[in-house]
Amino acid sequence: MKTDLTIEMPDGRLKQFGYRATVTCKVIIRILFVLINNIYCIPTYCVWMIIFFPLRKIHPNLYWKLEGLFFHWLLAMVSMWSWSAGYDIVEMGDDIRLCLNDRTLVLVNHQSTADVPMLMTNFNSKAGVLPNIMWIMDRIFKFTNFGIVSIIHQDFFILSGKDQREQAVKELRTHIRGSYLPRQRKLIILFPEGGFLRKRREASQRYAQKNNLPLLEHVTLPRLGAFSAIIDELSPKQTKYGGVTNNNTEFNENTDKLAWILDVTVAYSEGRPLDLPTIIMGQRRACRTHMYYRLFPSSLVPREQEEMTKWLFDRWEEKERILETFYSTGEFPSHKGSRQSAVIQQDCVRFLILHLFFIASSYAHYRIIHYLIGLVW
Image: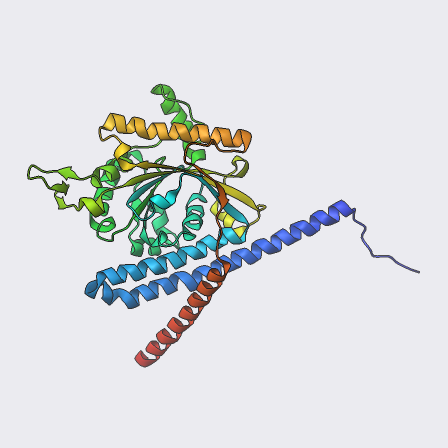
């Protein structure tokens, strides 16, 4: 008697099963890779900073230059996660090469946990930018795997919540004077909305209705505190003797003064923001994230509180119109001097070299630590 154990399956279901299996394998491989990548990169960065620590006392400028270089290499690893998943970045608008070597405040709309890694991917392709960036992020990120790196780099962790707002601004002012200016950093990354779009939109619209402000759908009303503090701290104040000061500290107008405001509007494909788990797992199909630039001289920002608030709100109303146009037509509005869109290119050979460096460093550090433990015991 002949038996047939073959299970028949329609072609469509078979293809769907095969596709799901492929995606599952891809997700597992990417998660394992990212975990291992963190293991051999972040501890290695920390060990190198310990090795270099004597330079912080003897030759601080050299120490911070080396730290910035290693910080850039580490962020390149994060950039590779989104690039390898096929999540490209398209940039357009003003030519930001004008501001990258000057003190610049970068204002970005905040939609998801993907915003920071996508900005890292963007700036990774631009030489000398990532080492000279100070990130302003929620204090919760201090307790993530990347928190120790940001602490060493002297990024700023801001307190969230209405009750903490005044204290947070005060601490930011102190950090600018004590870390940002002495380290000679250039760019400050700020998300003025203070939270993700999906979490703040309803509260923002209620506030807008109460105060006769425009109802925004694609962004939320920005908060002034951190923006005002940065403008104030990085604007020279004339003294009666003709010099300039900054809150009773020495202030070099030629090198410390804020020169530019870079307004970055982030638009995700189909209006569906990526997030960090998606970038890590790569389960979403390849897509493009657009970044639209508007560049303003810092002198255009009013110093009076009411006028400054209006200027910042105007930028967010402009973002709303830009995103509305993009999501409805697929194109960004053009303006005088804007550049054509271009896909940001990453260097895969550089990624490979950096991986080999971190792996070799991890092995060397392990052997050294193992040897030292053997001497003690």
